[in-house]
Image 1 (spheres, helix red, strand yellow):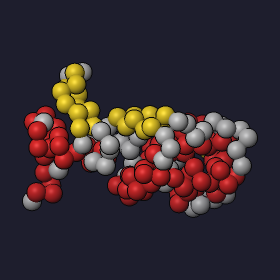
Image 2: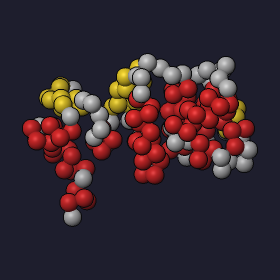
Image 3: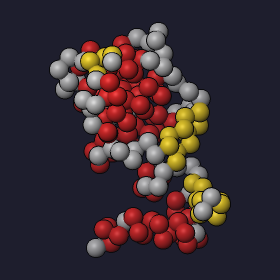
Image 4: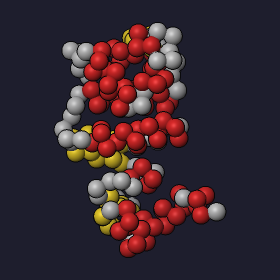
Amino acid sequence: RGTVRENIGATRPDATLEEIVHAATMAGADEFIKLLPQGYDTLLEEGGTNLSGGQQQRLSIARALLRQPRILILDEATSALDPESEAIVQANLARIAEGRTVVMVSHRLSSLVAADAIVVLDRGRIVDHGKHGELLSRCMTYRQLWNQQNRHLAR
């Protein structure tokens, strides 16, 4: 148990409230935190059971951002987010990536469209790499996955 502030600040106990709020804002968590009964001073239940999966995931991203790592690995970081929360994280991704290397692991290809480079794996093997547009035109595996995930847009 602990507060939202303590949860985010666990990775940097010396962090100021301003730094914690900034990390939460970048992670798209500030908006829901402000709605909690005591905001950043709201007590979290063991295992974060009083938060949704998406809210828990945004707090995890905020904790990682608070450390200001030079290399940030986001492994399926938006998988449990609702579309609105994912849009917030995606919109902030350029700012999140500033001054650091970001490695994103994702099965949701729409979250990788703006990446500098995408590595396509098939059964654990690299089959191609490049930017989104390049892969759509030359990599059948990527194109099939993209079309499968975006069928609803073609209608």
